[in-house]
Length: 166
Ligand SMILES: [Zn+2]
Image 1: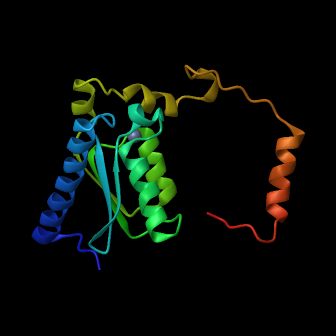
Image 2 (image 1 turned 45 degrees about the vertical axis):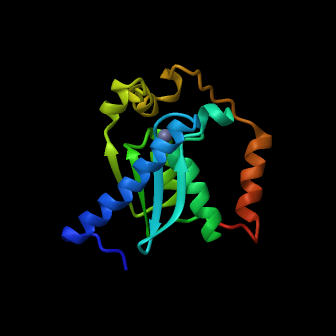
């Protein structure tokens, strides 16, 4: 059982945050990418690790949290991380927050804040603003073009007997 209250839980949180910070430092020093690390913990055990790999893998989505979620899901053999806590060396950006919501982690604990990230050149305030705007008001034009072909696939999904909901 995961302890989520009291001094023991706080000690546990600090321990796992320090592991996330270690990964952030290693990744930075190895030239993997930005200074961000993440561990995912289930039942007191680390089941996923990640560090930012954007610049070394030419993958703009390779944020520490996304890498750690993929690692945890591979390790556990499932796409659902209910029961897990995500420890991030920095407050998750909107993509990583959304990824955590898709993964259905129980809890997120972070160390550095988004303001502290902004102060070293990683400002995601624009992303938070963009998500909240209506599609047509975003800086990337998002245009709705209804398509029979696209809609037909949705109908087929609804009827698909062996679909796996998530
Ligand atoms: Zn992110």
